[in-house]
Image 1: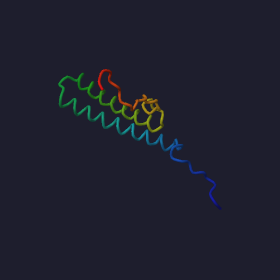
Image 2 (image 1 turned 120 degrees about the horizontal axis):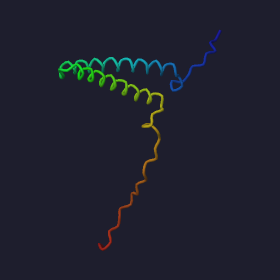
Image 3 (image 1 turned 45 degrees about the horizontal axis):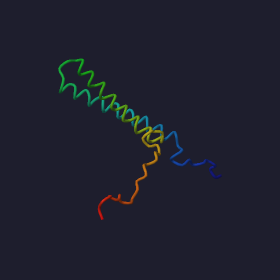
Length: 98
């Protein structure tokens, strides 16, 4: 018996994209939080600033993961096709010079 399963092209495989996004988000969140914690321990003395450093690292990790995931799903505003300005290739003429 032949398999009648249709193989989806990679651009339409939402499950694989979602798995990649979850993996990316978890890794970036954990690594950037640990980086913020280490940086906070080395640079700051107050517990409040140390926690702020941890929160900043976590936010950076989640933000970068969100950007990459939105690029993966092709929904990012930065990847939107914006018309480039038209540039005239002809040189400008100067009045008064021959």
